[in-house]
Length: 197
Image (spheres, rainbow, N blue to C red):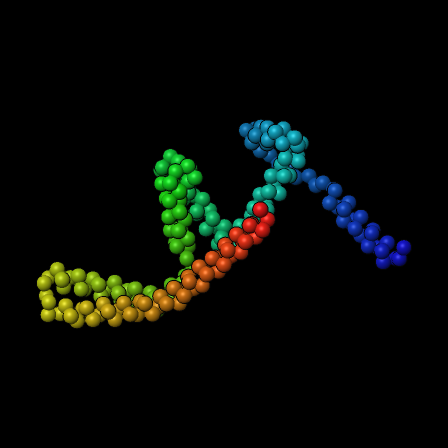
């Protein structure tokens, strides 16, 4: 056997020995939590130590799967709103059409609320403000019956609407591209599933 192979084998053996070694972590907990862990360990046919280790590993893996802190905050917000819907409707989202559609709308609203500031460009912000102001002026003129300046306010609204449409164009295009990617991915997943099933 070559010296390189012997060194590789001894290195692998050292790594495996390190993995087998256990470190103690002194932890104090409530009696209620300890009892739950003991019950869970018994149900899973594991020792208390194995149960705690398994749960900690799952928790850390879940944290890894949640990705960035921003994604974690978004997922937490969605979970909280879905729980609120359950409390309000007294039903899980899979138990009734109303609860399902409420959940879908809630998730869409939460995702919109967490839109990155870069989506709201300065051009779009200015266009929204101008459009809001122009529509407010037009509504005031309509209410006052002042038809002499109504044509002018109509032109102002049209100009503000055009600026808004121009500012929205990149966002609309990005949404179309994202929708296309999602459709292609779903189609690919269906083909893969059909091939497996």
